[in-house]
Length: 279
Image 1 (cartoon, rainbow, N blue to C red):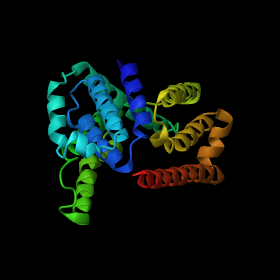
Image 2 (image 1 turned 60 degrees about the vertical axis):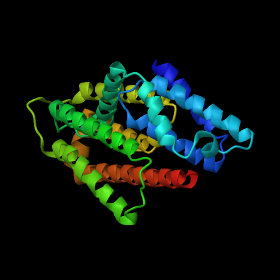
Image 3 (image 1 turned 45 degrees about the vertical axis):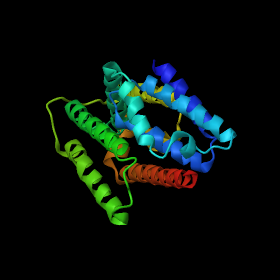
């Protein structure tokens, strides 16, 4: 099922480029609404419905009919009617939750293994991951339910308020990761730590390679690789004392982490600029 869904998404992404700017804006609002409003619905059925709508809009466009004239000025009502007929698919939801949680663990596990003298708190990882997973679903649902609401009623102040509320909502997750301590702490030093980092890199690399749209994940690649490299070299006995116990070694590690963060933020900025130009 996941393969079928991915194929539908990929076909949708390709065909969407045939739309005029106005039709593309109209359809992408509809797409965002249908994908996010009902996260319990069968995503494969939703993607098939979206693809059918897209092909109809493209056919109408070729006849000189705009999306709004073909599909109507109230697409939310039609979308709601379609979503009402889509069955709930609990297995897909559980699989999605597992995927988000796994993604969080993979993203945070390598940074947690960067310094071998610090323990990895498995309990904190799980609890924090569950919180961020829940937060992600709440935010996605909110986006879906407000897609067709008037976003400009409060102007710039409204965007600031929503941004602050989002920060407040996700802040507990960061506080948990910094301050929550559980008894499930383990030290992964030496060869065991190096082997685990290598395994995590391979798993993360395979998932990244199989991802259809890699654009959003590219900024994470340099920082993950640099942190993984630091985690490996600081576990090599002949290098560990120099890197962790001397000023030149610690400064070198700090510089490497600083470079990783700078590259990360530059890539995020470039991604934001590109997304802004495309929309």
